[in-house]
Length: 297
Image 1 (tube, rainbow, N blue to C red):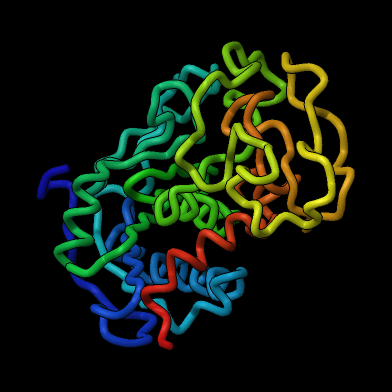
Image 2: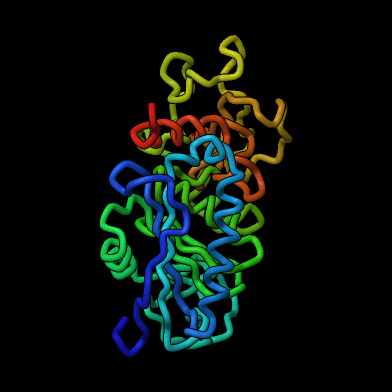
């Protein structure tokens, strides 16, 4: 990132629910947008806000949220797309000069991992909104990709709003991925058979399925039901068994955090496991707890 790659040209408070000192402040920046493409960036932000406001539990938490849009121009349009990647995928080889250095295959291994210069994005967000609680970057490319971490980075793919909500789970609330693989269930996934770790810090996965110790005991669907709810009979692969309970059931389903066995998630499906699903009740409980300081009595 240099001044030759673009720059920040303005900030606008697009959702105003009160003073920044008393609200949860989401700052959304763009990368890979030419000046002539800034209307597209505004449209991408508006599309996300529409989905964000409708997604539970944010629909009932909306008065606690402010959203700011930071307009950023880049020298080139799009994102870096390396020709080769560790997952054997083939990219376009596109070389771009963008202000926040967005690139696919950000870890050198997974094509869909879209990353950026996180420190530069955070610095720009803090300069625009000193009270920022979460920072998101929308990258001007329709290729599928995203990543969580300090910055929720998403592409402008048609599924971008789902990607954005998923990555927001990582960045704002510290959620783990709930899917039970890293490379994919249809690929060799060496080293991901069984988790051998202490209790993870993330609120939505656990190694402990005892009734009195499980993290989400307060939202279990039926405390009389045995735990775990499902067990994977073959830890060398993803568990193929269907959901034995209702979609909103909360129990302990084996397979989470990139491991086939040894880690458990609260619901069979959740936005942190598969796009197109709502946040499960375990995640919703954690989100509500995070927002409590920003809600009026």
